[in-house]
Image (cartoon, rainbow, N blue to C red; front, side, top):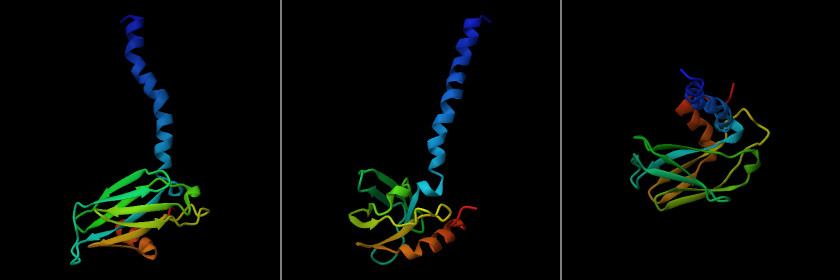
Amino acid sequence: MSRRRVLAALLPSLVLAVLLPGLAAPAAAEHEIFYRFTVLGYVKDARGKPVAEATVQVVRDKTGFSYLGATDARGLFVVLTRLGDESVGEALTVRQGTTERRIAVAFDPTNHTDERGTRVDFEGARAVEHAAWFRSTLLNIVGVTTRH
């Protein structure tokens, strides 16, 4: 095989080898606790029955960027947003259908071990934030609320 053909064959691999490490760094950051804020909760109809496959939207009011999630058969949704330490106090709008709830991002920016987030439940035309229930709900879902 000529030298030119060998180089042509290797070029795509070399380009990937150079680009992939740089692309992986931002993706890895999203998995760190201090780069995410989780909004979870349940969607139920007016009679209290779970609503499956409902779309839930979390909008970062400061930027207009939205994160989408969907409910499972139990009506449970989990939406991961990319918010860092500097995002404390920012407003988020959590929306399901025509019902929405505006919440303030609250967490201790010096704590990089506990999961950050809140719980917002939709029942019929009501949306209620239950921030104090976030940890217990997350524990029931995944079994862990801190990084070890």
